[in-house]
Length: 123
Image (cartoon, rainbow, N blue to C red; front, side, top):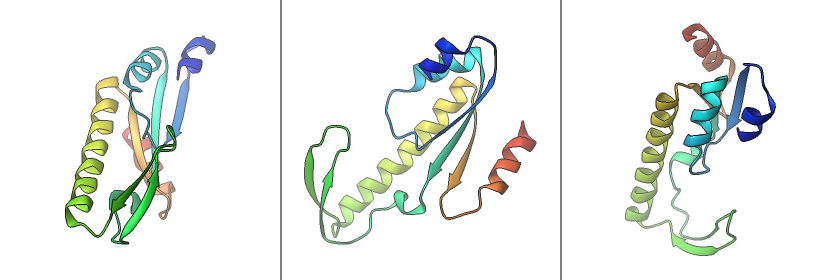
């Protein structure tokens, strides 16, 4: 978004396609949306919203490389993950609203045409 803001001088419509997992993008999104017409397309898989009960699982933070074991058979671990996911989704939606950015959610297992048509009708 910084590249877009710094390089593209004329106002344009830009589509940002992302999972929006990265933290702290609100400031750059706000700056970009003040200069350009930004449309956010959040891509996600339906399996991301819940943690399956598969027992012990080793997870790795892709950004830091740190690894950790979690017990996915624990109902409290799965509930905590589900709560985090719901909070994360609401936070992203709030960020888009505060920045004046139109957005749509695209699931990897569903047709993307219907959500896009709905978005363009709204615009």
